[in-house]
Image 1: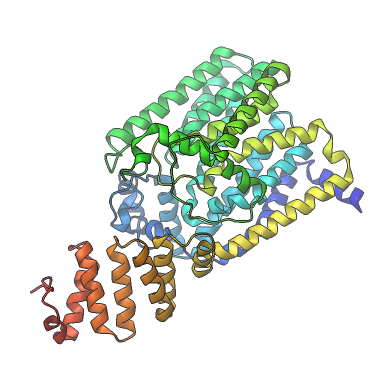
Image 2 (image 1 turned 90 degrees about the vertical axis):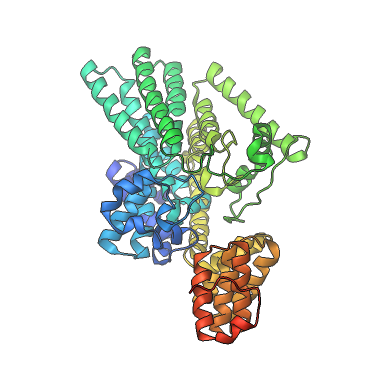
Length: 526
């Protein structure tokens, strides 16, 4: 039985086309249930309520404004124009059908798995180990946040151009003619420039090209150092040009980073770096044991490294650095390449630039490839897959990963299940309670929704939306007096909040006695 499994795998890995078909089928098998899922979380901002994606004539606005501008929101620096362009194309052909919006990131995930397979092969990893390495990537549950969450499309989108840039670079390191070198470099520049408008993470291609060049040099596979330098300079110049655009023409808040909030975290580089070092072990816990998966992470920061978790993190960093140095000076450099890939890919999330979260699962979408490369290399070194029993155990592990993916997708595809899962791990997020209440009220379960709205208010009473949504539920239940009070509370927080202004005017017209029940009402329009 085990020998037949090995024979089957060897037969699949003989041809690239067979590998791609297998990746396509196995990924759809475990991600198929998300295709039946609905829009969730920020999808209502990026897609459902975003007027910019309603027509391709808005392409100019998409590339000149923030991602949420089309939903009428201001105050954030998110800029994902390629993602919004894809949404506009999908809307043109399919309207607001969640099926096709879910399908695109799943297809991109399959493509990325195949590109990883090709990259590993070109770096002298055996086809069998490359095959299993790509399968780890395709089926690891930690990556569901980047694939199953429609608004996370930028992650698989930018990875596809990063991998394409690296595959082109590998061709550049070979003894090709000057004409072909120029052609390849121009293609890489085009792919890089397109990718950087998917997400700023495209810039890490520069670091990845550098460590790939070091690996090639160590192996004696670098045909021309000057060509590698020229290649890198072009990518650097494109990245600098993009940064210039972002700072001077595409900066929508005036702040550096994705948040304009002021706190010790955003104001101190040391606190951001210390916080990153402190949370680093959390990434490894999620990778090794992906059971407690959730979107909402505690927004905490630390100013000191004097804690057990920070100490463990420092040991991890030092151990990784030592292994990398041993690999590059005494070995062929594969462990150096894998560990440095992980480190370079995490730099954008290290706190160098203020972010809107401390750590998130989808930030591992690119870094995890470096660790998978190390695993694939070790498989080859110790001939793991020459032993049928080991192959069988590995297949069982991947199957368990796949089942966990399906379970997580059941949550990503259902808003109520998603928010209820979040509340298993955190009871201090007003946003989660509010969003759960909104979903329950949309389903006509206003009694339960009101409990969650009130919980959100008790946790963080700074948003007019929560009082407004609570008032809507009270109106639905035939309680205009209480609804009137909640609309007033919303307007106390934000006097110009248009939704409550319109709602309270309508309510007073239907129930004129409310105007006399409170001398606090001054917002009635003529």
